[in-house]
Image (cartoon, rainbow, N blue to C red; front, side, top):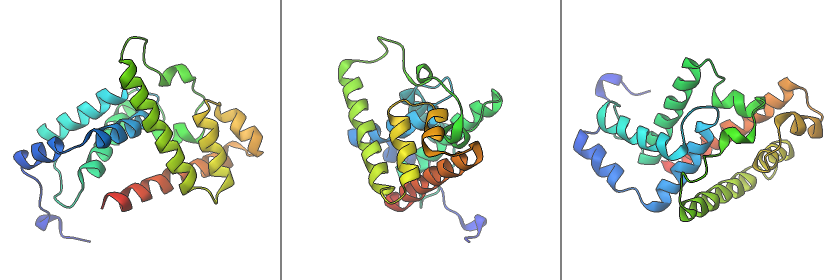
Length: 189
């Protein structure tokens, strides 16, 4: 483990440069991830990403060894989990693991985005789902959770189809979250 005293951080100018270098594809990927973290909060995915960028520019210390995507994903996760904690809501990992939520929570109000933005978000979400399906192709339980949640099924229905109790279902969902986080860290390094 490195010595915290020797840890180097980006300057404000370097942070602005890194954020400015994000491509449209990077932004779409980050918004897709933001949608996952925004579940159960008042955040819209785009707003969560914007707030993460603002936090990076104004108040977060960014280690030089972290990629832009990894850093912003971490900030979005922190912001969303902070809101859940302040609202006494379950963290994302527990929400994915079995929180009974309606799909209405995960959609934006009509008129909040353009058709082009909706299409881009749908395509990015579809790419993320396909990536997760490839990642967990050898784990039928995790694959069923991915496909069920993507289809809008409630956790109770997915648990029943797998014959799992709540604890077993939460374990499967933790495998999903851990596997996804581990791949994100590896691919962004």
